[in-house]
Length: 168
View 1 (spheres, rainbow, N blue to C red):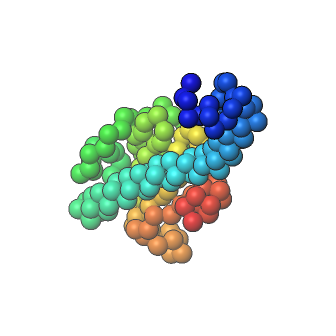
View 2: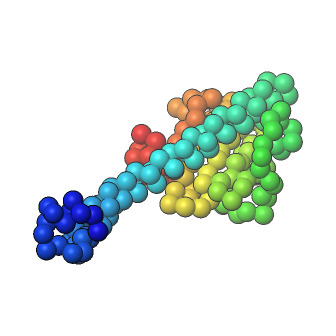
């Protein structure tokens, strides 16, 4: 043992932490993690939502270019001039009228076109897992049905917690 330490505290043979000191340290670490973990989770989901929103914008803009060239929306991602790192998911039933669907393990991107007299199309993307499953974004293009929804804007949809609390 250090001789200086022994001279400062005569009679102390074995120095170490007491149980109370260890409990206080564990308590402080627990409080810090209880505060930080929800913020970290929120930041992770915000970044995933930003990725999804960017994806919807890219596919939506490609859909608009296709509409200007052909006069109707694309019925398949293969018709669009956009490259997606997604696989076809046409077997997934979301209860929506879709023309084509691509996705991965976290989300699905949907082309929803309505051929005929009321030519409109929208591109949507939804989370299919996690606390925000069923929430996502839609971009309406060439809207001739409901003038209150502006064409070309990305709209948040799903739970209030997703749209208001997470995305503001």
